Length: 424
Image (cartoon, rainbow, N blue to C red; front, top):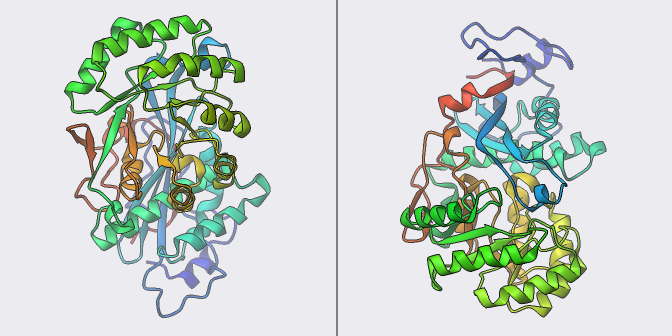
């Protein structure tokens, strides 16, 4: 294994070496970029407390095909096309002492190749670094790409590294990530979204609802936002009659209403006893969300589309949400999520993280007040493990770290790869 000084001599900036013979590049018929690239000593001078260093990083661009094209209100209003796939950026890293971690970020419809490209630029900056210094490393990667900003694609690429580092830290401690963070509970209320999209006819939504509840899921979220609001109300009436009054029910308009429509629909939806109305307005309309939240009995939830803690702070400061819905891969990873969670708790907000239940289960379990976590079965083919759900709750696994490992199917869906450094 090369020490840091040796690697600095052998691989200067921009140099590329052939992959080591014991680790041939993964092909699967795709164009694969595999590099062994290392960097000079980090600016940080390690002291006696530095017991380990990052020696190897592997990036994978994985495209998950969806069995059925997915449509929400953005498709019905012509803003987007149906979603047919989800692009993932996976980061696997290892240290000189043999510890490993895995993390991921994702993009829907566009942006996946961009995340991979930016991550490929950043990865060499972590070689030789102490994996425990997660906060400092997040800042280092952020400044490495400062010219492209502190939100959006840039920090979503950083998120995959950050999540992998947290996974590694928890694995090294022998603890599930929730326990490392300090869990308030060992299970979290969960609701299903994937059965209530607008491309599904009402009869199919009802069948999906029955199946979800039978599987142990505790609540259901139904998409709304038809150009004709009466169609939403008819659909929701059928769902409520089908599941009964006691099952928690949410709706999601995916930013498709203007302020007057949101006000009218919000009043009409009061009779359904909803847990929340999600994204009734444009994600950045903090004032509109605040006015709506103040006028309705039904809680307003939003935040999933925001891409930084600073953007969420605008919502919080305006009183724009009763329930905040951050997405760790979108806002820069677990390090940033924890900052936002502290702000949300300080302002007595409820928490319902968006998507990526494999990550958010742990983060929700560590939130002081009772949260919700969103169940999506879309990602299941990517991992060898499954989340345990019963009695309306998703249970924190006993496995160390996030408790996930990449499946052979994920490897088969890989479109590009890049390796940096050398595995011990």
